[in-house]
Length: 222
Ligand code: DX5
Ligand code: ZN
Image 1 (cartoon, rainbow, N blue to C red):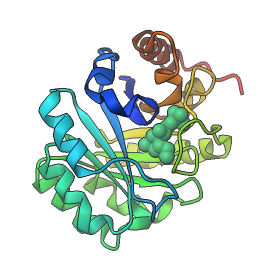
Image 2 (tube, rainbow, N blue to C red):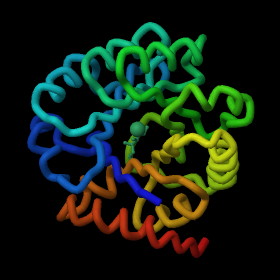
Image 3 (cartoon, helix red, strand yellow):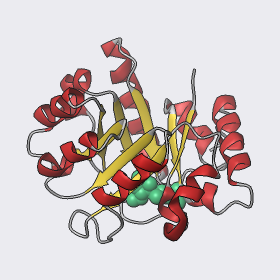
């Protein structure tokens, strides 16, 4: 199985984002956390920064929108050239229409669920998605502790994805580190956001490779 590591730049130096991205050449994509201070109690970056990053790099951009009214705002991130656009189901009035719109604009369509949101109501729309993101912390801040209680949902989501017969990526986000990634992989995740673990490391790229190796081993001791 392929294991993808997608470092979050939330913990990077925002004054030097172009250089910070170059610190992780082994990463499979760059995870960009967009927060609007409505859907989550924090404010980060928005469309102009994503547009600038698009001009600065050929890396895959994995945009995670933690914003209200996703139906209105998400398509612009696909138009800006992000290869993957993730919206929160809790912030979308018409997730199927939005997923189709993102794909029509050339992006991978991805849907995120907060830790307490169940996957089962969305089982029948998985075909509309290229990735499911399961939050393993309450969204809003980097550096929080991993919520073990999401592990059974990772397992159930992997089962539902298996039934579609399609290759839908399963991403986890929040508190992912060398201590927690193996259990996520064992439960069925294949795509891993890591913010503080990567950008807090002395050698960020070595941490990306260590995280991938640990996910591939998938030896869960919890
Ligand atoms: C949290 C963000 C995450 C965050 C991850 O709301 O969506 O992407 O940056 O940071 P760590 O890995 O430190 O939990
Ligand atoms: Zn994120």
